[in-house]
Amino acid sequence: MKYGGKRMAESFRTVRKNTIILAEDIPAEQYGFRPAPDVRTIREQLAHIAVSTRWQLDAHRERMAALDFAGFAVRIAQTTADEKVLQTKDDILASLREDGEKFASFLEAADDQLLQEDVSFPPPVQPATQTRFEMLLGAKEHEMHHRGQLMLVQRILGIVPHLTRQRAAVRAAAAGGRP
Image (cartoon, rainbow, N blue to C red; front, side, top):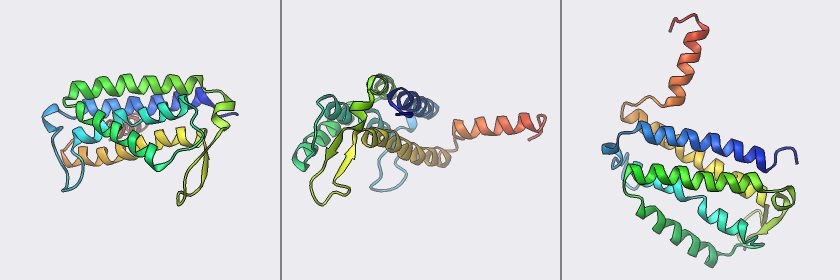
């Protein structure tokens, strides 16, 4: 497999690095900001991102061949409890780093055989099976989705996201320092 565990790990580490920079850029006193009713606060969203790979690690380390609603509900309940433990910016940053590296290390060690294994899901879930590769790649997609939401929240707070700042610096350099 050309895009295997090592490349997935490298890509995930890049995504997590960018999430950590975003989390560092937002002042701790803004972590309670809720951009709209029924939407997670910044703290809740970052805590969700920080621990969201834990259930994947469990499922794939155990090489579960099938996920059912009852088992998934237990994992989601545990993830929700884990999120609530992360109350401060420092707690969240530590979890982003530690959980991110645990997940990336698992990906790095994943061989083609593991990545090609199918995992089945009960009806009405479609598709009824996914490879572990697809599921593990989904963790990165999930994080990028939520980080995109947080980048909009940064804008609401008057913070220019770091990736936007970097792109502006590259453009300015290419234009000979002219904005």
